[in-house]
Length: 109
Image (cartoon, rainbow, N blue to C red; front, top):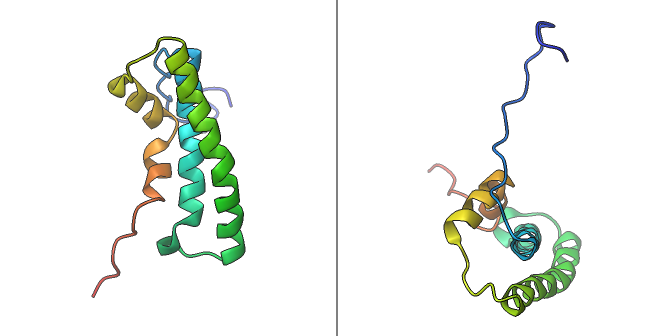
């Protein structure tokens, strides 16, 4: 929609910080693991079949995460730059996705 047509433009998404290819893989695989754990979380409800499917997928996603970290190590990337990777996680909606792994707030009493 062109400016002036009365529509609301989406807010600008901050750019991803500069990451090595291995760091990008690490972040992607980490978020995939989070997504599967969020689907399994018993405190979030759902059905057993969906949780079973997510648990099955978790094994392969965890293997991908392991492989991404092994690649970083093999390439001599011995440090995890927490600040940079945290910014990348925020840009990629990591806070919401990680929130699905935690317990929901208790119902009001």
